[in-house]
Amino acid sequence: MTDYRTVPTVCPYCGTGCGMLLEVSGGRLAGVLPQKGHPVSDGTLCIKGWVANQFVESPRRLTRPLVRKGGKQQAVPVEEALALVAGRLRDTVEKHGPDAAAFICSAKCTNEEDYLVSKIARAVVGTNNIDHCARL
Amino acid sequence: MSIKEKARELLEGEVDGVLGCRLVGGSHLPHLFTAAGIEDMAEDYPEGERYPIASIVRRLQTEDPGVRIAVVARGCDERSLIELSKQGQVDLGRVVILGLACEGDLARECGCAEPYPSEIVDGQRVEGVPDYSLVEKMDRMPADARLDFWLSRFGSCIKCYGCRNVCPLCYCKECALEDAEMVERGRVPPARPAFHLIRALDMAGRCVDCGLCEEACPMGIPLRTLYRKVGRVVEDNFDYRPGRSLEEKSPLAVLGTEKDLE
Amino acid sequence: MGENDNGEVRILAFLCNWCSYAGADLAGVSRLQYPPNVLDIRVMCTGTISPYHVIKAFQMGIDGVLIAGCHIGDCHYIKGNYMTYKRFQVMRDVLKFIGIDEDRLRLEWVSAAEGEKFADVIKGFTEQVEKAGPSPLRSGWEKDPAQWERIRNAFKPLETLEPA
Image (tube, rainbow over all chains, first blue to last red; front, side, top):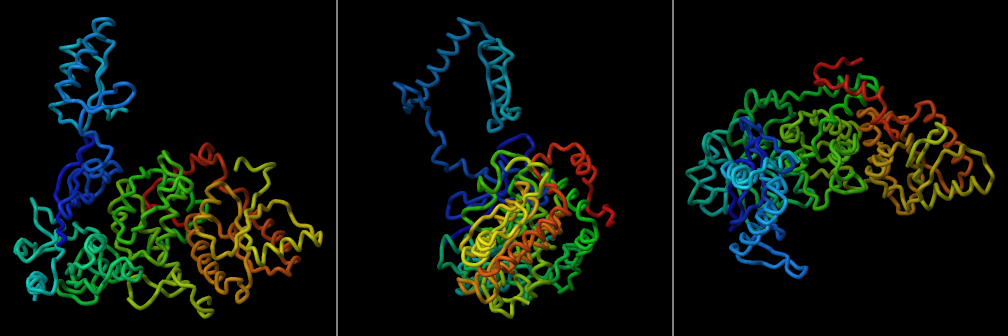
């Protein structure tokens, strides 16, 4: 039997925080509706909010770390990916200095995660090259 | 009998689910109730929280063609369902309408001609005060002032597709507004006035004046005024109003007879 | 579709294969003179002309759109032109409401034998469109400072606009 319910939540994209309803039907995310009467968005959404459910089950969604080996992307364990990234970052900074590295954080991360990224950039690597996807 | 009482009764075997609202943190959210959960169904219908009920019915029927649903429907919801049925998108034989009349301020300010469904279960019928004053004002303006006005308002469009997404009558799998030849990709505001004209002309003979489009527009574009004009054009030329009758076909959907050309 | 050459108006004419296009052909064969501002597009029936075509034409900066089909009762597909007629009413009135003058959109019935009528229609319509002037949506309108200024000043709530 079909079931249908709506779950109120906040849009995962930018910092505005528009209220939206996730439509759940047959146990899956079926769509998005703007939440009427919401103090921030008052029943409206931008295009990113309207399609905010689509990335969840998108076939293009990244679910495992991918590393390019021999010209092709291959799924690898998280530890291997982290070791690769950390190692290359360290090498770059050692060879070319801290400002050779730059960091981009995201509206899809929590504020706390973005804060950690800024700490890694400034305290660990020693660069001010940090920005956020909302500015692009 | 109130809507909720009727809903309980229908769930005893006549329908599989009732599409109503559930109170969550002070907001009324659309929800499909089964017999098990019907007690949670809200019994008030705040004017500020209207959702595209007809679209939800259409999608539920698409997912499960055999499902029988009762739906709390206002006048505009019923008109949408009637139009969708005529266009082959909804099977009204599997839908029971629990009619809700819009009251007081909503009925007067929303401005549709008939803020009540054909059979009212809840709510006091209030005669609609259809507001065509803005349409008429526009009609009296000179053409170039009209164009400047529309170009200026369309200029604030952020191409969110909210008007299309929320419209109960919009169901095309391939939408003209997403066609690269009709609307150039990657431009905001989108092609003026083409973007809004496409929707306006597609709404001819189909728009039921529910007003959800203008409510969903973050930029306050006076869409309803435009679509009301389109509705009036169709009514003046063909004496047809969408959603008024299940038997009447839209003149733009059938070739018709020579009599229709008067 | 670039700038209008020499400031001349450009007209797009949708002609149906069986009647008006043949009528246009007859006008040509009969060496009837008519203004050269018209670009013809042959369609099988004017009933296949969608409002999208007309919208796109005006969006591209065309100054006038002519739809010429078979007379009522003579449509090769029996009733295609009924649709044309009905759609035309809606398009004309809605475009007028947006501010695109109804003088810029015309519907005519021209049969295959009416070469002279075709030439007359083109002459008449070209004059009409010339009087209406170049389209306010001509290529580059968004960069015209005067138009930009007028549009900016028009940005008001509809309730506060003066009717005349």
